[in-house]
Image (cartoon, rainbow, N blue to C red; front, side, top):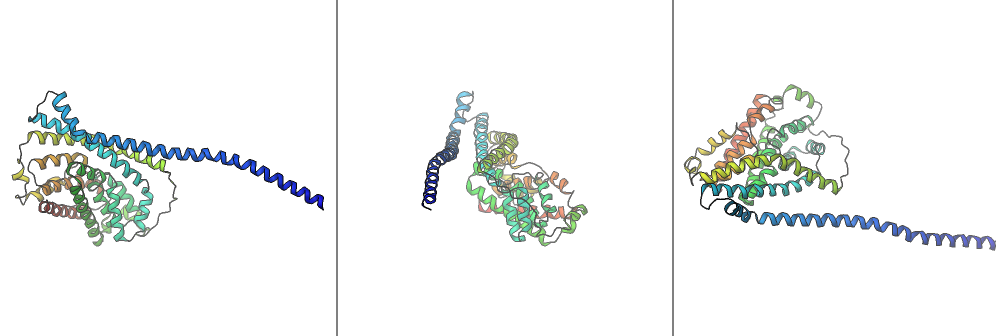
Length: 382
């Protein structure tokens, strides 16, 4: 018995020695993994800080750069029409594109948390009142023009999202998206951008609520009704949730910059070019009599002119800035801009594939009245 006990003790001692020898090796092997992970995070943080600092440095020196290029590198003189036009263009184009790049990148990361399938599931499974708010917020971070928003609008309908909620999204997406807000912030400041966002969301949500209360589902085209017949408003979509790493979310933000900024920069450039021409050549207060506050009829006329036109926020907002500098009233010009980007003839044509004429007419009518009200409000407040 003693021999067996001694043998067991020796084996236990040997096992303990082996465990002590293996443990440092495992610890040593695990340390590089921890170090690599930590180094990766530090590298991301350092790179982001450096890039953000470089962005800020460039942004803060744009005014001096534009003046140097206009009046020192080019044979132009201060006080001339061409000089003012050129300085405006050289300053505004990189300024707006820098703001767009930064905001679109961070909004792209936020949007990586909400895939179209997950969004449809959330909207379809929410109470209608909450659904309107969620649809409006989704439109804010969805940089679509009025035509581009229609396919997602159709997807919401076929997924069982209530009709009114889908219209809240359809109005918000082109009118109060990140591109519009960035441009307004860059050109007019945060107060104007905030007021525009609040009033734009009010118009969108009001439109959605009114159409929802009118129970106009019967004015959908027959093929849409067939697709939605078996899907109640609270239908849930079966989706497998995928875990997304932060590295993938950063890549999503970079892809958003590539997709959005590279797509809208020509519109930004053309819009600013037109605005620069107005800024440099149209006399001061030239538009005060036509689009000023004293012309009570200016707001509805501007909206009625803007409704059939088609542009996105990137193309029209620089023109708005130039019109304001020439005496146009803020509410009148902003109402014109809202009408141009929220409603358009191409959008109505595309919607005709899924909506009957009466529903399209109600949609355009409610949005038009809402925009006119916002225009008068801006003229009173600002």
